[in-house]
Image (cartoon, rainbow, N blue to C red):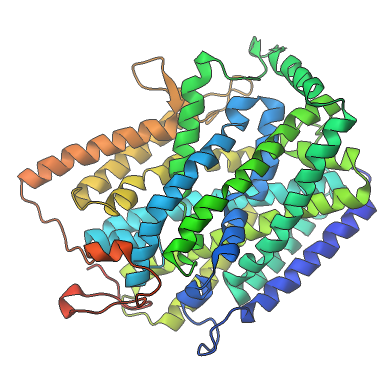
Length: 558
């Protein structure tokens, strides 16, 4: 039986902090609730927190949403295992991301504010008059989000493993704490909706900042400074891997890695705010300028992420051994093990609690966002077009529970690599919704059927390309996210190649369909909608011919 000794001090601190945030999650049901609203009986109230979060709450919510437990575990793990190309690209990509938020998301907020849109698929349906294109965006968002939720569980599991809760022989002992954590998460999400992760995000982010700042000051001093740390990392990553005959990783990307590095950064930046949970956090804010102010101050998280990534190199110098319950090396355990090995147990408990809580916040937001998409863009558009707001909220609550259970089963029943592979595919798939969503915020030139065809081609090409990447060590398919552009030796992020093909197909077919004079569908939005601010009423009904919809009202598309 392969079991670890339980670190009781760290475990007690993790449990206490978890209980604190769980209580906060239940209390959040009455936090910032409008006095004229009885209960969270609409998607505006349950799924978007009343659309009333200010600059700082939105900052913590977006930070908790985008910088997940898996980010804190996976980025330094990638730096430890293979170096900068697969690890440090996350830092420039988050920097590239903020101009996208500033320009694009403020427009999406405005048009959604005017029309009561809850999801990006709502907007696509109203913009193009196509429930099929809306359905494509919704299904992509839901499917891409599911493995993302599962990976939050991977983060919690890493914490539980290093704490000593589990063994390779006792499945119940290993999985029971994880199940209990997600039962509590499901309960307070059902009760409080988006308000729960918004409140908890404040605690989570403060704990993460504390742990990272202390670590990047204390650990380099302990291990002889950054020069010594970088030298150790360079030596490890430059050593030849016997299985592949190539260096184990990349310390500083060379010319051969430039295309992979920049395309990973750019493609990831473009994809992140296509995810439903990112859009949900944006639409929950109370003003257009709240989004823009957040784009200006969110780079503080990128600074923190850069320091966190370097902890992967610190772990190399420290000789950290991330050994899983089955005796294999698991890079995901590097950061939790590093804290447990080199800090007092009480401080390690705080750091590990920050990672665990860092899973609860995004998992809650993701499940809410996926549920909102199902309710609005599948249940309402295709099953019950006349559904009332209270029923919408009830359906969304139930679906959010189903989504969490699905993610839990996925992690417990399947190998961890399956969740990672699915997340790889999720990033490729979600970028294929970019033309429909972002182009629609600026122009109505693209044809709805051309966009749907481009989406389908991008999804198929991206999936096949990812499948054809074979891991050189395990020989398994879905072995990476970078592949040569067909017919060339120029390797880029697969999502970017698929996106380019998607865009070409959409543009060419649009010209063809325009020439054939195919109906373009009704656009329910107006040019003034894209600059509306909080001073405008949430839903504007100026003329009956506009067919503006109320939150929870009938589907905007036929």
